[in-house]
Length: 382
Image (cartoon, rainbow, N blue to C red; front, side):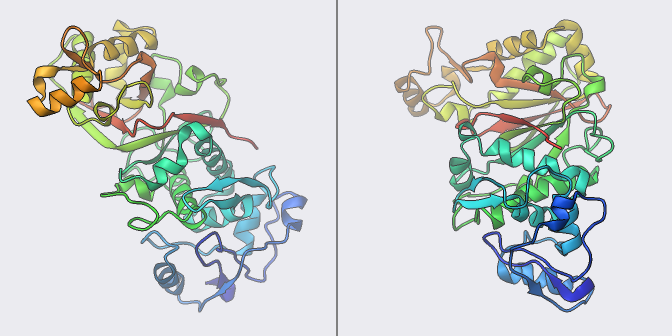
């Protein structure tokens, strides 16, 4: 590595010095800020020493990292109005203080470009809102992890994937690095470790980081950000506590209402987390709608609230769909109505449509819910 020095240990100690000048494009305040994190000196061997150190120290995610050098850290700090010692909050499970400097160090290792760094900060601000329940989500046996949904005019410039392959494979720098930076912050600042501080049974691929955008231009509805109270020109990150990526497909339904009905029945699968709860009153499930389906559904449901109400109305299972012992549990929880139906969720707004993906009108995806988490959004601050 250039200069032979880079960042290093868990708990946020991933600082870096290379002896060079700080980035010239940043603010004077960022350039004048003195980095405080410890320094790790490594041989320049094309990055292998850094990679091995990250594996040995447990502060890597198993994939190669970039060196968090002074220049890279200062360039990121220059992209935000927050000073390096500003504390965003305490990241669970070990409640490490997420200073902007430590966030920048992890973002540098993930390869975040300066213009995208405020998205990392916004995502962390959103997941630190108490209603998102970061303590529960970072320690649970579930596979749940923050899934980031981006709205706003900078999606293309930052290479936020929202078209074909937006959940993996499109390889946009913004999507890949922003999501990974948030995951590294939870690991290195928050101390999240599978099998140690996190009791997750399986984990999921999104624990490497998942960030994608909404294809706003192909949506028949107001954007997710608009529906959550933001302006069309705002840059917004919405954080969903998603258990995983649940795909479904259809070529059998020509009428859009039939398609919406099939979606509702599909997401109401018997082992959905919502059926484990006393009520279905908390949490959201995100429904990713490809643009071709979105056009069809928009014709039948010009107002997205009508689509949400229709899905909620039909997202249920008959109590007879469950074996007797299981049915008895659901009955004892008060989940069975007077018509013998077990509703998946309590309210239409808990079904959140987002338009994205390729133009093949065949596939949809549900980002299933942990339930005990409320989706949060934050505006990107520059």
